[in-house]
Length: 395
Image (cartoon, rainbow, N blue to C red; front, side, top):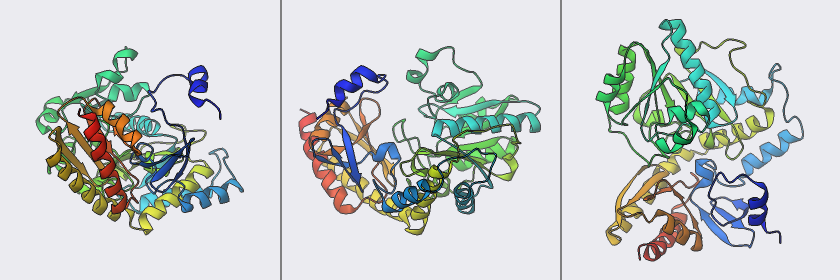
């Protein structure tokens, strides 16, 4: 058997501290490593595999499309791209869509759209308000938009044009708004920042403020879109319609794709303004259309909501047993468990040993992000593994 860890050390840039697991196969909520050990995957590829690993609907779509057409220039029409565009627009409050290859690209495209809108409608303002503890990607503009110093310090000077405020603080948004402001950009629920949920009226108040001040409202739904919160899109949960939405992760069900969508008010891009060689290619769009259609037709958001609540309730029960758990918060299949001590790293290792894959954010928060097709029985199994890992990690 090849020593894949040594091969990585020799050839691959060390840009991530990997867990010492080589995953070779997945099915549903489970994955297997190169030694045959199985794990419950409650990371779902960082909220990517929304309908599970190796879902037959995606597999069939990829196989069928790969035998016909993988990619061609965007100067031509391709049917999978237009079928996916129709499916997303008809099931959202948006009217137009552009496809790219990742969440960071989607956010970059949205920023270009927003700034052009500002030049047309506000004589040039281009400053965008974003929130602390947000995460919008790792390109230079998105590092600037992401108000977390750990993602900025090594890359100075970073681009300008972003003003940062505390999440869930309407007063700070009002105070930050000036003649240069063109938009507010938020995640409906902050995921990477620690699973931070806004108060009930926060997003609706932001919407009203944007309307009163002729600003665009952008929701970064890269993590929350496609059923993660128990609705097809996160904005639906809060009954607030933005002007622009960005998507990725769960959009492809495992293949790399991103998108930004806008309403007619924000629809200002013209030929030559934006583009992507691989964006909207036939293969990824076919897979994404199959995944998105499965989510809609099989009522996957309902399962995310119901089983997600069950998962959160079971974690709350564990909190009664383990005093080191200081908070459990989340919506749907996005739940954060916070601890009163910095045990996340040790806990993750213990979970790995017990056959449960989770994700840490910071030193004291663990995220639960299973596939949205997860069952209550799988949650029970995960809770049992987590309970045992806690007994080890808190010693």
